[in-house]
Amino acid sequence: MSTREALLDVTARLYAEHGWRGTTTRRIAEAAGVNEVTIFRQFGSKEALLLESIQAASQDDEGQVGLPVQPADLRAELVTWALAHHAAINGKRQLIRNCLAEWEDHPELAPVVCEGGMKAFSETTRYLKAARAQGLIASTGSVEAATVMLMNAVFMDAMTRDVGSMSPPHTVAEVIDMFVNLILRALGATEVA
Amino acid sequence: MSTREALLDVTARLYAEHGWRGTTTRRIAEAAGVNEVTIFRQFGSKEALLLESIQAASQDDEGQVGLPVQPADLRAELVTWALAHHAAINGKRQLIRNCLAEWEDHPELAPVVCEGGMKAFSETTRYLKAARAQGLIASTGSVEAATVMLMNAVFMDAMTRDVGSMSPPHTVAEVIDMFVNLILRALGATEVA
DNA sequence: ACAGTTTGCAAGTACCTACTTGCTTCTCGC
DNA sequence: GCGAGAAGCAAGTAGGTACTTGCAAACTGT
Image (cartoon, each protein chain N blue to C red):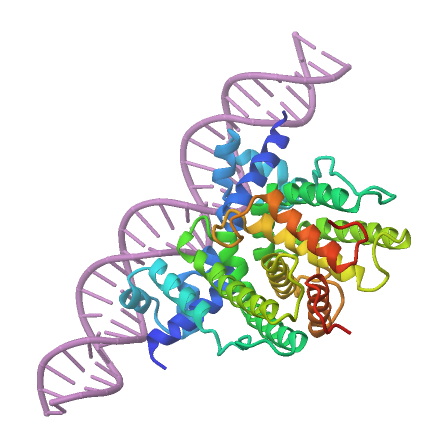
């Protein structure tokens, strides 16, 4: 692993833990086992290093599970997708929290917060519209609203699960099951138990 | 307005804008039109001032609109409540974002994030259970899940509305209308258009 | 009018911050 | 083996950070 990669790696980790101001060049150098001047020789400034490392860290999508092109088992497919989405968000929750708090000072990293959500939104909407075309859900009701609610529910649970007493004391699987059931009921899914 | 109150006031504002580390004693003193030493004479330390001011700022609930004891018009009452809830969160969104990002460094201010949500959850659950007892909604489906989803949806919209392209390009009223409709449909409300 | 509290002001302490400079040492391709 | 780029090291710059001290001025209640 090159010095550059090591620096990008530990910087993203430190940023998630301590935020922009808390991630000092001294700490980065220590954590990476590198001399502090190397940072400036490699990246020019703290800002450049932070931006590059945060963007890199937010983009490794770890081969995310997508929704199938043709909906078959709505419930199972949505649950699988939601679980994967939850895990992806949960893994980056500290990073996202800091980006969310600091996006006014550093608007460049707003995409970090939005990108995942945007992709998930468009894919789920596409999927639910296909399901509607197949007659798997009723033709009334807003698919977009359902998508947003499901995504927000999953997002919030993933983001606040560690804060304690924010989310209800349920398993991730349990919570997602409840959410998917509720959404399907609202959309008038034909095969709900 | 006493010096103490002025300090508490501007400190909370600065914290919402710049976070813990970004809220320096020098800036606080400047913004409050007060000498820096006054801070330490009044509060002893930056930490004490920040804690007191943040807790104070998070607690002024501005006479929040509650849900009625006896449910009558489910849709209208939920929409009114959700709008008030949305406004309350939106007013404190920067404060909440920073508390959420920094709660590991300063766990004392976790209540700032949780408290409002907890109260809203219990009240909405109580309300929906009353509605169920009155036969206004179906007896199947989890009232808790519906509550969590509605609250999360409102919370997320209020928190990310300024980030841009995160929430869909709709009015607050429009979005909340969609959310409430969806929840009522999922709960099998009897009088949905 | 007098005592006590509160505030302002100026200066200083000890440490952290990003960032630079000059020089030496290592490593890697040819 | 040798030259070039990358790294380490020590020191320094200029500024910010929380916090302290001593003293004078202003306000407060009795």
